[in-house]
Length: 340
Ligand code: PHE
Image (cartoon, rainbow, N blue to C red; front, side, top):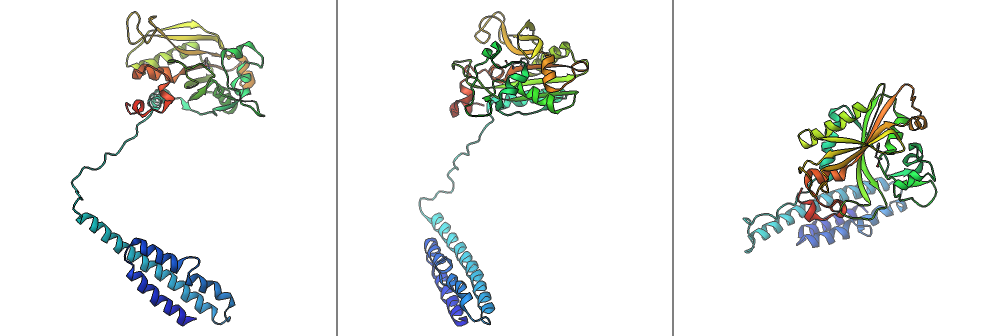
């Protein structure tokens, strides 16, 4: 057996050295070192050998295997170098041709604006939290003071998931409010940014998938004044100057009182396409956290007050970057994305 291994080694080394190209080398390796090859056969026969013979045969076979792998690797390097040299010396090889340009990716416009918004809020001491996009009915509606069968549900066109578990594609980022209140002790300031879904007819300003920014601040003596100041300060940072705002009453079941905040159009005086010729752009829903939401989340509403706000990241991105159709965002068209 030992002679056989030695002979195998001699033959194998000769075959590898004679391999004319990479393909031939691959075949030889497969022959010699593959599962059906002579080395595998020898190793498999060890249990049937004399006990005394087994260790030496095992060792020799394994040493040979390692050696052949190394010899083959060396030969491969030589063949590769020869191949490269042959390609280089070939007539139509022109090393001065410019390389193909590398295609660089870029950040999605929503991601860009999202990061700017995150920067402003983190500089004001906010933490960024995330919640699930497929949400329990409880967090999306019930804990936010929107009971089953309540007409307030009609405000949002919901994708209900089939199957057990009462799941919905979240229609807003407000469920993160409840998840936060349940798990963190006040005081806190948090924002949450992400995708939301509504069963809407698509047009230039509506898509079934869009993005919201939610804010929640809970502590002692938190007031609506803080809330309005925060949003005005956000706008000033984003647009580089103070913008006029106006507050209107607004109904959201999870805040009391509730408002809507409009921004004076930064692009015109007296009406343009962006503001629909009204000079005002609806920007944000906001209000003071409703005592029922506090109760559902186990927060002591005698001791704490809080404010919440929610606005669309898509519309803000359209305003900041001059984009005219919300459907571009999710279309995945490189001609659009490469502009940013
Ligand atoms: N979640 C509301 C919406 O989607 C916005 C909102 C958030 C309103 C927080 C008030 C407070 O329209």
